[in-house]
Image 1 (spheres, rainbow, N blue to C red):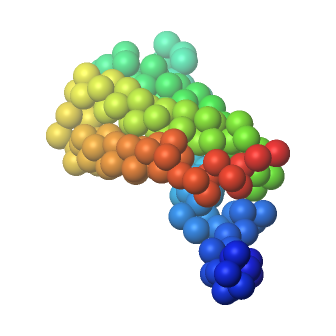
Image 2: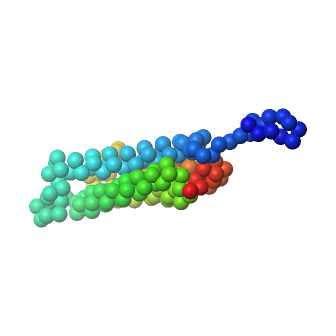
Image 3: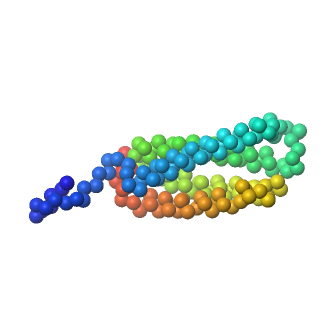
Length: 166
């Protein structure tokens, strides 16, 4: 507690030494993003292995009818591997309260939107995915709102400015 000039106690003590307030939601969201990237990566690879596609994907025996399928799966694996590594680094930097973690988090959220948009665009050009509801624009549109909200919060928040100082 602080004492003001007239001797009255003020309850305006805000401790920025720990991650708290809405910033904890940013850290949790980023950690969930990291786990989700890893789950997508593992499930994609496991699916390709179980179907025998990953071995035949780059050979002449690969015949599903669309030559974009190896490109699509390769792109998904590479993008989500990069996203996982970047999200993991961002979580570690946020937990260490590094000043640059704010920029990393904003780049991560915006890259989620870009990756979802790229994957949606490519899957629309593959015949077997066209009528599959799991390849709809939902993941793309659902990634936009959190990115906008958290980027604005990271840019405007006093807590973020005072907590991420190392």
